[in-house]
Length: 383
Image 1 (cartoon, rainbow, N blue to C red):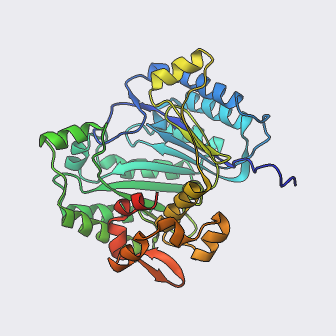
Image 2: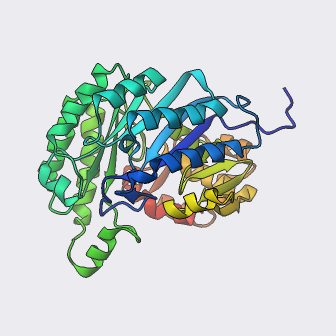
């Protein structure tokens, strides 16, 4: 092995931007009602792959993730073509984790059969809620009854893992509603559950509605109680709480997400996709039409490039490490990054400890239960 050459990424993310409609809380790079662009999009991703500074087959993937947007907006044939374009350059290893995000309203037997035949072994289903009124508030296009039906279809297709996403703190949602959602998700026996508090991000339609008073954010105490209910209920049901928002059955953690969280490198393709290779983060243009226009003209779709300094990379590594509940000892972080934890956080570390948000346990710096509740407000001090 030539240790002078950087290791090639062994993970890849493919952003599929198509949606039936644009949900009001979503601030991702998506385009609604334009599936007519799907064929050109597949050709564009193939062009991106051809620009890689490697030869076909030189890099093998251990994780491959199709996210969105809504990958299941593609037809079975279109998904087959996209998959072939990716794996012709980046073949998958024998035990690779291959994930496809899915919308319950789009899942069909033919699509699942195609995915299973290609080796897809993990479907991440955007369930969000088991209450129709909350799905309507979130502007989702599926009814709650779809979730169990689609979960059954996934298993009949012999796809090994079903991962379900839920959103809490939806306007009008009670703690009892949320507990019912948790009970319903446990009843379906998925291998993984992600729980996200509803956020109102600039650029999303819900942000404007919040500012105008048309929507109201859930009470802070209610949000706290919902999050704690998720932790208590899911861990009691045998799930490991291994990341701030993620719970998994033993041995069923998201290997792909752990690539991000442990600071490993990865490829990424499609509009808005951000890759991290050789200490450099390169992000494609978020606009789907601009992304396609650039590639149509033989231009790079990259809109932003950031080269992380060693200290910035170490700070990011620390944040991701703390978001994973099994954080590493500070000595190990220093050995891997060259920076001591105290130097990265500075004067604010003792203050976070004093406030009861961080603590040392088992010779590791960890978020406390109180810190878990406000972790998003802690990270800016680290970065």
